[in-house]
Length: 185
Image 1: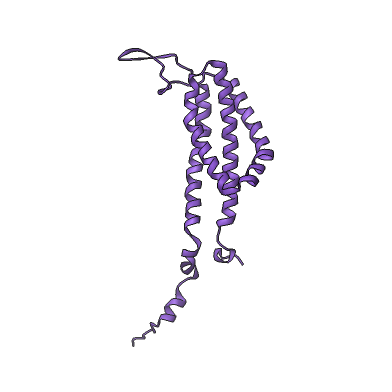
Image 2: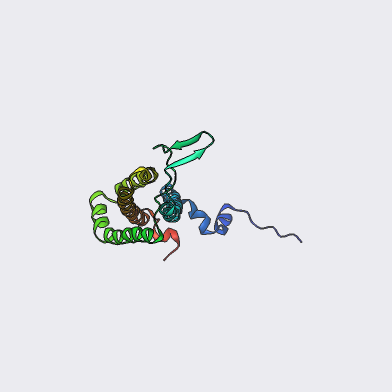
């Protein structure tokens, strides 16, 4: 004996879980952009945390030997790092940490309140681009000037990362879907 189940449209729609019905509501273009930008930001921050101490501790090279002979340093092709000792590297990073705490308490809230989270995040993104472009070229400066310049640039990095991440968190709250679409009652 064969039993036939009714295939009316209302019966099939009733069997589809509500998660599949609301999937298009949850992942809007704004939410997808926020997720993608956070992934890129996370990659950049992690690589910077790893590369900066290595870059500070790598010896600076006055000239390099190649098959063409002894070639002087060129501003377009920096070679080496700042040649700081472990203690000096730790002191530079400690100064960055202190400035980061100060910036998070005083400067960042005022900057975001003044520019708003969207423009603050845009300016911080441009600042991060400047950081990644300028840092390798500081090797060419004289020793004491290069250490002061890298400390200032790391302070700038702390400020831009703080503004970027705080603005990003504010934007998460603004662009997240309504609690009902996330199945919270």
